[in-house]
Length: 129
Image: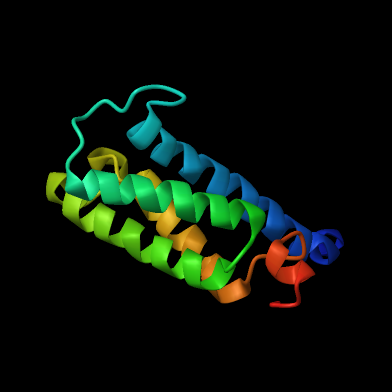
Protein backbone atom coordinates (compact mmCIF):
# COMPACT_ATOMS: atom_id res chain seq x y z
CA UNK A 1 0.00 0.00 0.00
CA UNK A 2 1.42 3.34 -1.03
CA UNK A 3 0.92 6.39 1.15
CA UNK A 4 0.34 8.71 -1.80
CA UNK A 5 -2.54 10.45 -0.04
CA UNK A 6 0.03 12.38 2.03
CA UNK A 7 1.90 13.64 -1.03
CA UNK A 8 -0.33 16.69 -1.40
CA UNK A 9 0.32 17.65 2.21
CA UNK A 10 4.13 17.51 1.92
CA UNK A 11 4.69 21.29 1.69
CA UNK A 12 2.53 21.91 4.75
CA UNK A 13 4.19 19.09 6.69
CA UNK A 14 7.53 20.70 5.84
CA UNK A 15 6.27 23.93 7.43
CA UNK A 16 5.14 22.00 10.52
CA UNK A 17 8.52 20.24 10.76
CA UNK A 18 10.29 23.61 10.50
CA UNK A 19 8.11 25.24 13.17
CA UNK A 20 8.34 22.39 15.69
CA UNK A 21 12.08 21.76 15.20
CA UNK A 22 12.83 25.48 15.45
CA UNK A 23 10.61 25.84 18.53
CA UNK A 24 12.47 23.06 20.29
CA UNK A 25 15.82 24.50 19.18
CA UNK A 26 14.76 27.94 20.45
CA UNK A 27 14.17 26.57 23.97
CA UNK A 28 17.71 25.16 24.06
CA UNK A 29 18.89 28.75 23.67
CA UNK A 30 16.45 30.22 26.18
CA UNK A 31 17.71 27.71 28.77
CA UNK A 32 21.28 28.85 28.19
CA UNK A 33 20.63 32.59 28.08
CA UNK A 34 17.52 33.12 30.23
CA UNK A 35 17.25 29.97 32.41
CA UNK A 36 13.84 29.28 30.86
CA UNK A 37 12.01 26.89 30.92
CA UNK A 38 14.69 25.61 33.33
CA UNK A 39 18.24 26.62 34.16
CA UNK A 40 21.00 25.23 31.95
CA UNK A 41 22.89 22.55 33.86
CA UNK A 42 26.46 23.54 32.89
CA UNK A 43 28.41 26.76 33.45
CA UNK A 44 28.40 28.99 30.40
CA UNK A 45 31.53 29.84 28.47
CA UNK A 46 31.93 31.95 25.30
CA UNK A 47 31.16 28.97 23.05
CA UNK A 48 27.92 28.22 24.93
CA UNK A 49 26.90 31.90 24.86
CA UNK A 50 27.43 31.86 21.08
CA UNK A 51 25.41 28.65 20.80
CA UNK A 52 22.64 30.17 22.93
CA UNK A 53 22.52 33.27 20.73
CA UNK A 54 22.33 31.15 17.56
CA UNK A 55 19.63 28.98 19.10
CA UNK A 56 17.47 31.92 20.16
CA UNK A 57 17.95 34.16 17.11
CA UNK A 58 18.09 31.37 14.53
CA UNK A 59 15.28 29.45 16.20
CA UNK A 60 13.03 32.51 16.15
CA UNK A 61 13.80 33.26 12.50
CA UNK A 62 13.03 29.66 11.55
CA UNK A 63 9.82 29.58 13.60
CA UNK A 64 8.48 32.49 11.57
CA UNK A 65 10.19 31.29 8.40
CA UNK A 66 12.24 34.40 7.59
CA UNK A 67 15.58 34.03 5.77
CA UNK A 68 14.96 30.34 6.25
CA UNK A 69 17.47 28.83 3.84
CA UNK A 70 20.58 30.74 4.98
CA UNK A 71 19.59 30.56 8.66
CA UNK A 72 18.95 26.81 8.44
CA UNK A 73 22.29 26.31 6.71
CA UNK A 74 24.17 28.20 9.44
CA UNK A 75 22.31 26.32 12.18
CA UNK A 76 23.02 22.99 10.49
CA UNK A 77 26.71 23.83 10.52
CA UNK A 78 26.57 24.91 14.15
CA UNK A 79 25.03 21.57 15.09
CA UNK A 80 27.70 19.67 13.15
CA UNK A 81 30.36 21.61 15.05
CA UNK A 82 28.57 20.95 18.35
CA UNK A 83 28.38 17.23 17.59
CA UNK A 84 32.07 16.89 16.77
CA UNK A 85 33.39 19.24 19.49
CA UNK A 86 31.20 18.07 22.36
CA UNK A 87 29.72 14.64 21.67
CA UNK A 88 32.01 12.73 19.34
CA UNK A 89 34.85 12.65 21.87
CA UNK A 90 32.57 10.53 24.10
CA UNK A 91 32.31 7.77 21.50
CA UNK A 92 31.13 6.94 18.02
CA UNK A 93 27.46 6.13 18.64
CA UNK A 94 25.10 9.12 19.07
CA UNK A 95 22.82 7.13 21.38
CA UNK A 96 25.77 6.63 23.74
CA UNK A 97 27.51 10.02 23.42
CA UNK A 98 24.23 12.00 23.87
CA UNK A 99 24.67 13.59 20.46
CA UNK A 100 21.33 12.57 18.96
CA UNK A 101 19.69 16.00 19.31
CA UNK A 102 22.67 17.72 17.65
CA UNK A 103 22.70 15.12 14.87
CA UNK A 104 18.96 15.39 14.23
CA UNK A 105 18.94 19.20 14.31
CA UNK A 106 21.91 19.21 11.92
CA UNK A 107 20.13 17.14 9.30
CA UNK A 108 16.67 18.66 9.78
CA UNK A 109 18.15 22.13 9.27
CA UNK A 110 20.21 20.94 6.29
CA UNK A 111 16.99 19.60 4.74
CA UNK A 112 15.22 22.93 5.36
CA UNK A 113 18.17 24.78 3.78
CA UNK A 114 17.73 22.62 0.67
CA UNK A 115 13.92 22.31 0.54
CA UNK A 116 12.94 25.75 1.80
CA UNK A 117 10.58 26.70 4.61
CA UNK A 118 7.27 25.52 3.17
CA UNK A 119 4.19 27.62 2.48
CA UNK A 120 3.53 28.72 6.08
CA UNK A 121 6.42 31.15 6.33
CA UNK A 122 7.26 34.82 6.04
CA UNK A 123 9.54 33.91 3.12
CA UNK A 124 6.56 32.46 1.21
CA UNK A 125 4.35 35.45 2.02
CA UNK A 126 6.89 38.02 0.80
CA UNK A 127 7.74 35.99 -2.29
CA UNK A 128 11.23 34.80 -1.32
CA UNK A 129 10.14 31.20 -2.01
